[in-house]
Length: 178
Image (cartoon, rainbow, N blue to C red; front, side, top):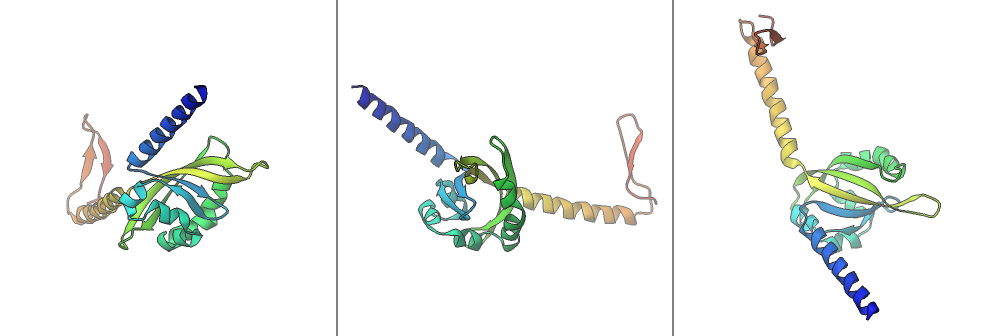
């Protein structure tokens, strides 16, 4: 019958969505700004940070505050929350922050959120977000910054002028004034 066919299509759609969400390496979540909590998180949270999606969704806002770096939760409350509440439909908000995994290690995450649900009055009730782990990128950036600083100090101490040339042999930059 038509009813059974519609039910099968709905079940297939739900199966597809669940399979897709749980196969991603990115954390997908639904966040309620007023309550400061996630009401949904896919399985990637357990792979990335070691937390069960059910446990995260069942907890109140205290858990997010406990596992988010103190500097980042303060920034989120002071700056980001208002930006999220002020989003227009179709607009996205991006943020970088640190979260502690279940073993106590900090991970840098980059998130992107957009409006998922509004109240009849237009107030943001929920956002849909995706977060990826950028810890290796942050560590690489920091190492590059350290190496660049070291290289600048070595070059600055040389008794010879050091400069960059382009392919035509023109000076592009001077590293020191030896």
